[in-house]
Length: 421
Image (cartoon, rainbow, N blue to C red; front, top):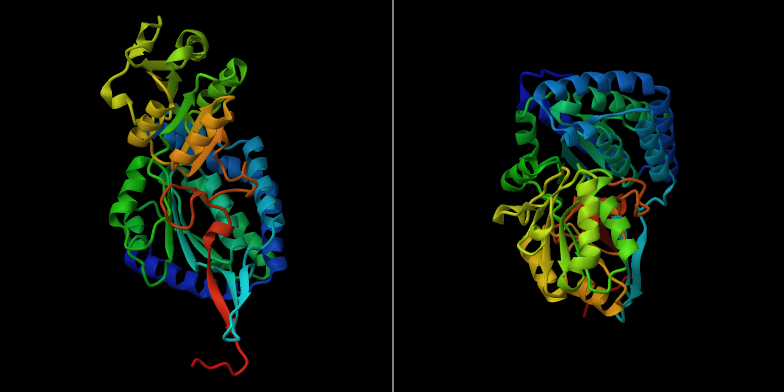
């Protein structure tokens, strides 16, 4: 194929092949897409030794680059995580096919019969950083929704992504679907990203999945529409009516289970009435677990906390660090989240139904939770099998972007020689 030194020509060729594949995929049968994904899952599991060997090369590259522990955790693959990739592929395979679903149907007095039905977007461009599992998640969801996809993985996951991509292509081949339906950009050259952002003739939407630097670049420079979230500045508000045990369980899980994912809690807001009870207990438990607590004025009196700076509010740490602040009431908590949040995921811990209703009504984050860990902010946990990312904008895709969110719709209008007077 490809002259890797001529990036514009390389990307133009990939784009043209994706567009041709998308036209074929739009009418592919649900059974053929399911067969491709099931076969890809089998190929991933059969090839797990080769995938782990490829990942070893990426881990060495990451160490040489000085990636943080959280980023290295994102990059790492083992048999358990490969099993998770296979499970995700099979889960997407087993879902109902969204293409052609009738969303609404009605008759008009004029005699017209109108249906609104799901239709693929066309070609999706996915730009992501160190998590190699995104290769499988994005490939599966785009295929399921009848879209071709161009995957541009990060330099850190170059070998892992290539090994996983080869399994996806094996699945396409087994099902008789076009191999160009899932393409992986075969270069680490950053110029490929810049090309993708301007390929308006062949790419219909870009999904960036990575850190603030990557997503900010895409949002600034893309001429193609973007589904994105810039940061996961996730807040948990501990209400006066919070249950102590639920609060401890949820906060510890939300912060410490995996610190490097976008659903990890980054800021704790504690109602002043429970600062000396639930608040003290939670903060001490966090510190005992190795979390650095950067506390506002009231909470900084707790031994072992660090004093928060202004820059700690609205910050995504992706590390064993959390900001914490006392608030007078739910109004102050909501105001703080509106000012410093990123419209990703926010949580209230309370047994008070009216407080929860206010929190849900007055905040406009893509995901709002009550008495549940924010680490559930994930398409797989929402029953989508996998996700291509979390969208925080105001376009039709918000929250976890699964197969259904990667479709648009069209109107099918039928008459019987019907004319307009």
